[in-house]
Length: 337
Image (cartoon, rainbow, N blue to C red; front, side):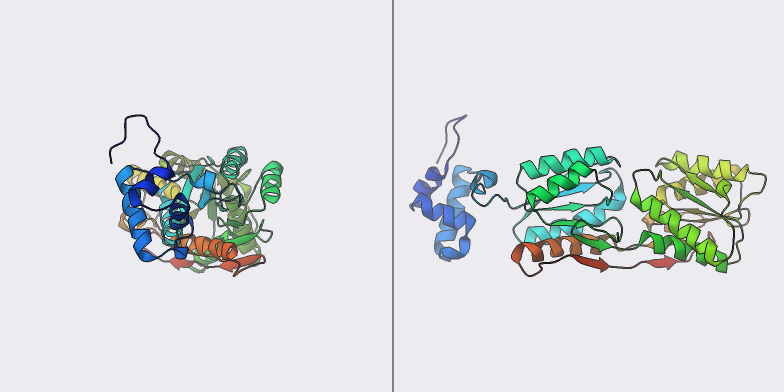
């Protein structure tokens, strides 16, 4: 069946091609369990033949929901989030849901705009990496009544459901690990913490470890830097220019750590002889640097899988209350420390 250019293909065109009623087409597309396999096949072939694209949003007006799920990430350029997105997408696709992705740019106002846009599309649920939200974003979510999974850190006060690991405990564990290796002046470099709960938690974990070790927190050994290789290099240079240099630097950001190691190579500084370097995430590059970098392995893919599973459990009614899942972390000791 050939359609004239510019003509909108409608459900009745599918019905005519499949030789069924429009009601049967609607059932085959929206509640396929209510029609026979033979009819589903005929409708599917007709949809393909006429080029029909179902309007899922229009079809969801009565239920106020679509089969879309909105995911808001701080950055779509950062490869760290790829495994999480993959986990979310695979689970949703198998369940007949579709994933829409938006970027917040590490800013709560941009996240609010993304949430508003998703809710206007009547998404079935939201997955939010950030755990710091504007009051308006929270109000919009409460009013919409959609299930929400936060997965950037194991926040004690989630909006609804949370699945992640504790950034505080991970930073605490790495700081204590460096101390066990004999390092005394351990510096910490994080991304800016003002609108980033993960950075705040990592700073809190670092401070907690030092308190447990009965060591004073030296503000000169704590830096906040924007993301990027150049920032890691700059942070290292600033720390190494202190009157009392650190003997280890914990970069609570993998790209920052890579930039620092490359800067050491450029300047001929020995790692860990002149300064030890540890990172926070286990991107592949860290294992292939010279020396390979000690880091934390985080369950990025599993976080995505469990986020989607929890959302689907809520949508199906199998899970009805708040839920929190801690997927933990693992320290990987390598030659950089």
